[in-house]
Length: 112
Length: 118
Image (cartoon, rainbow over the protein chains, first blue to last red):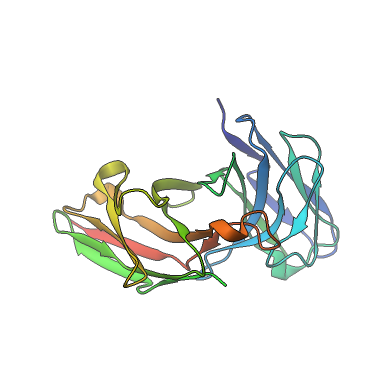
């Protein structure tokens, strides 16, 4: 059981470039989430997917898009990266009910 | 709307002394409450959770937390700090009534960084 995996671990982009962050879970969880973590801000929800085929905006969705490809995979896309999107991005998943979320190891993104 | 306030951004203790990390929450309904730990350059790991069963919750690595509804608090404690406890700790609330609603289902505090001196 790998749990929640994320790729890549590190990425440097130039302003205006695009990229997709990948996330996969092998726990048969229904719900998946994307967060960003910035110093002193805790984790803020970008988008979430309550179940396969559905996605919803979180607290800070601007500049991002998501795709719930299947039950296992949930990707986050930056269409035109900006320096304000420099952050650490975490993917998480959870099973039935509003219980604990399981987190991936994170992707550290720098936009110059 | 639910919210979480971690009262200290940084706590420093000596090895072998007690740890207290403070958390207050606001929730309209019966909350689920969690503490997560994040070691440097790592993901988040669940320490413990409260989901309306016993008010004193025991977690991993000797940590525990007590849910006090009258004080809207969920403070994290450990009797004796170890060097390996140095990390950032997040208090998190989930509002059962809003699960699946427009805001997702977890609200994170801003974190408390715990330093442990030898």
